[in-house]
Length: 333
Image (cartoon, rainbow, N blue to C red; front, side, top):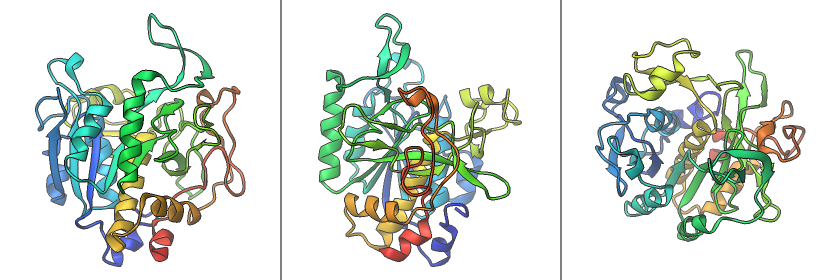
């Protein structure tokens, strides 16, 4: 909240109160003491095929959801769980999660997931090069259409730009595409070399990201202390490098998975102050009030040219318009 200048908005009495923010992810273990202590307004529902609205065996959704609450602690949070705990093959798709989210009439939707649109090996599904696809696969066109319709209806949708991925739907022109800026302990800003930045080969003229939230650096983007279910996948895996233990219910991580819900929380602040804002209004005010990021480069794996796009004065390839400034945007709506 401090680094995105949202603390000043909170001090003015705006916390996102009453704004409905849906987040589509692995699950949401909001029985964690952190969420209980803050008494956040949270509801968790299941997408088609998902199971158990109390659990999150991976931990991703639980941890990243804390980024929404950090920026918009008064929001009405609706978690859409995708994972099936006992049958991973039965888990819901992003499209099924979006369809469930729309039933709950959200004003903002945050999604820290996506598809990597690069050349892949048909047998393994693994990326074979950084060369971008130039046409959207037919299997993703229904998701594209659903997102276009949702934004046209007035819903602000935020997607992560990716962590070296050429991410769809993060590249769609209709969405807010969340990139990454790193701020060190001395307050110095630079583009995150973990976050994606690229020019879409599918949507002519589309440059990703639009602007940024806070994201750590390679190799792991260990950056933000986040609450996660004790013993979940991230709790165990990240303990090898993030200075937490495998069963303490905390992890230090970020990625553009953290940036998307941060930006969604800022959107909720603006919508509390001015509920009449359209998705285009929200994107425009955030873009014109960003703090310029002039140093660093984005993740080279996201750029077909082989090197990470660089930050520089004004709008740039690495960070778009820069780092979101919640208070500056708040003053303009």
